[in-house]
Length: 556
Image (cartoon, rainbow, N blue to C red):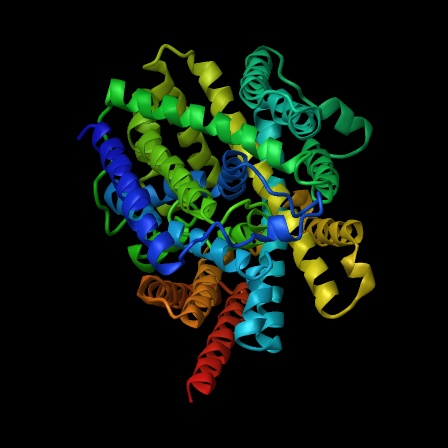
């Protein structure tokens, strides 16, 4: 079968999802009304609450959620075959993931732009709020620690991507200042900024930047120097006004990703390389069972709890009009899903064009397939191979895709640190703790706690200690976010079926996965991960119990 089939199926389902299902949700369930003031308008402060053009905000939401997750997850999940991965990525996005992002965004804008963790306190109780915010903070710290390591690893492995990965910062600041203060022409400035970014990609191909000599002078490994630099950057990025860096950076990254997606899909259609992997593989060597692990291996791209933090953390504070929520929340997730679909095509068809034997080795066992290095290699090389059908040099294609991965992982890390700062600020406001209300102190706490986790293991691998439990925990967070959305929808009197069904599915899937993981960790003697899995599961069950009890009391 040719890869063009995957392209057509995916695009058709995305169109039906946005123009039919999302429209129904917007008009009949959420009843979006532009006469209602959004938090960005009502609480406008020029720092966090900033009414934003919906196209710029789409770029922010799109790039904040589309980190390394929709790239690595689908590449690994192909060990179970391309068909299960395809169906979960496309149908999961249309009926679950995009609904989750959209619903979290609407719930937040109807509750002063506050985070999902804070909102649950209004529907359940203060204890549930504190438990939920604790879970969110723990996951945010883990994301920051792991993404810092992954980005640093890529910068060391692909020095050609260093220049474009860092030059985006001054370009974004120039873009943001010119739009908001200089009133420059939006279209012309966008084209100029993107062309400048691609010029640095071309230059970086021939002028790689290796910081090893600098790291040696400072007496540290290049990886650790990059990690430190990334956290210094995120400390300032998380506290500066969103219009100065966060918005423009994410918008420009969004344009860059759209260009790369167009090139990837065009290469797949024009070249139509055959899909060489099996459609279904129910018993790959050493791999866990397809259910429930497919649904936690592929998170971003199909459904991800982290997205509810973005929707209710940063995006809800920038939405100018209620009706833009469908465009930003639902369509933004479909954009990420389209990236996951492109990854499936690149790995199952594009990679085989030059590395057919290596492809078979990677998907011969779970040990090979679950390696993030192998997954990234398959995506980068497979995508670059698809570019060659368009006459693009393969080496330039490798730098383009690597730069995309680094930039998107960095924007997710930016947003995660900022979300952590928001939650700390919210805790300060709720419990009247003045130091926690200060954005710079909150940013320092966010960066400091993440760095502690990074440094807890030699080589900056501290975040990887708990990473094996992240997949199930992240999806459990999605279930809890669905629960908050359900509580809000029920309060408005609208139908809740579209939330109830995916919520039940997610809770069943993640409960089984966490239980199976805990048993697997026990057999390996890893008691730290056993206790971590059980604690996360018990906290979630506690939250669910509190919520059900609250509903019972209100209906009694």
